[in-house]
Length: 244
Image 1 (tube, helix red, strand yellow):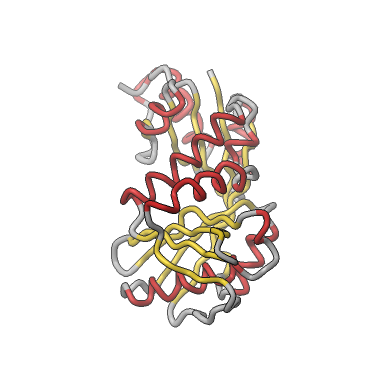
Image 2: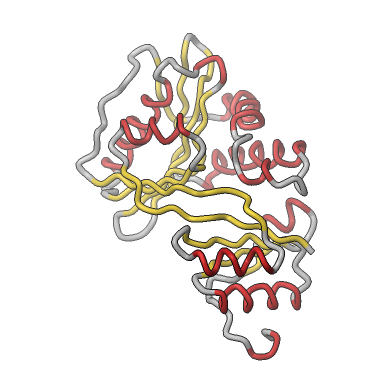
C-alpha cells in the first residue's frame, strides 16, 4: 500500500532482474512534478527499496530540485535519438565484416562489454563497484545473445571481433538499439558506423520504421556516430539515484 494513500505514478515498479543481480531491492520510476517525486520517494522507503532509479525530463526543473532535496543525486543525462524510415543504410567500412553473432563470439563479446560501457550511469554511481558493473555488461551481452535481443550483430575486423550492436523489435513498427560497443583497437576505423548501418538494414527488412536509441549526453563520439547515420535528438532526460 502506498503511504498516506499518495497517488503513485504508474511508472514506479520493482526491477526484479536488477535486484537479483546486485543482491538488494532496486526500483525505477519516472516523475514530472514535485508531487510525483514525493509519492515515489515515500513508496520506495515504505517498500524497503535500497536503490531507486528516477527518470525526470530535463525541462522539469521543479521535479529535479525536489528530488535533490529528498536525497537523489545526478547519475547521468540521457539523450534519446530516433531514426525513421527511409533509413541511411550505406555501409561505412568495407573492411569490416558484419554478421549475426554466434556462440563462438561470446568470449570476445564479454571481454569488450566489460570495458566498453564505463561511461554509463552504473559506473558513475560510486555505490556500484566497478567489478559489479563489468559483470553487469558481460551478463547483458550474454543474455542478448541468448535471445533477449531479437538480433545481435558483430563486426569482424582483420579476423578479430571489433564491436557489437543489439537490436529489439517493439510494437507498431518500432524498434530500439540496446547495447552498442566498439573494441578499443577498432575505434576510429568506421566499425561503429558499419554496425549502425547494418542495424538499420536489419530493421528495414523487419518492417521497423522507427528506431530509438539512448546514450549518455557526454558521450560525444556515440552521439556523432548516430547523427551521421541519420538519427536526430528527440529527448533529453535526467537519471537520478537515491540510496537507503
